[in-house]
Image (cartoon, rainbow, N blue to C red; front, top):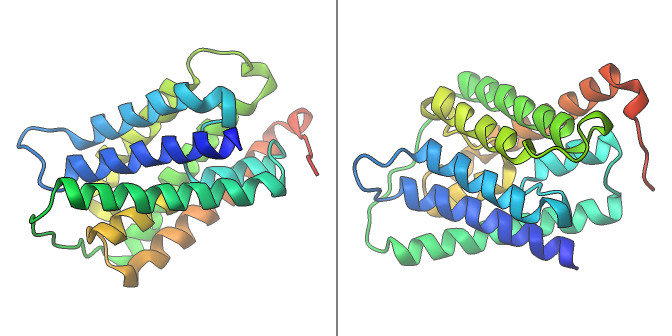
Length: 212
């Protein structure tokens, strides 16, 4: 149960930060920096408990890599989605009355942007937080947070920079993205996670661990 609580807390503060820095943000706030920092500190806070996924795509990648069980992966994802919904509701309360216009991304570029940087995120997570050769390092949270920050700066204006199905649910609840476009995030994010895990297993054959 502790793992699922940690996943809820980390995902909650990630989505809360996204919402509060995008919806009605004070001019000059650099949302990608705040979002990357929020993810970084939450990974450091909960990484030793749950692995600090805070992202269904990351959980899928770690599952394929063999570092989490199916019986844990499902509650992880449920916790992440519930946290995203709770965070979105909190942002709506905090930013009540602000008119939000949903982003209308171009499907092709958005799919590619979400795929590329979700791949980068899951690849970084697997190599910095699950690999034996980097076990016990002190930089994994920074690496993960900065990957999301980089992606948000690079393609945030193209796709919204979710790189995370739970974030996609959160921004859809907030109205930052249309529910009709959520498939873009789900398809690109989960596909990228699968590819990243397969690539990790391919280039790190000695790292393959299977949990049942």
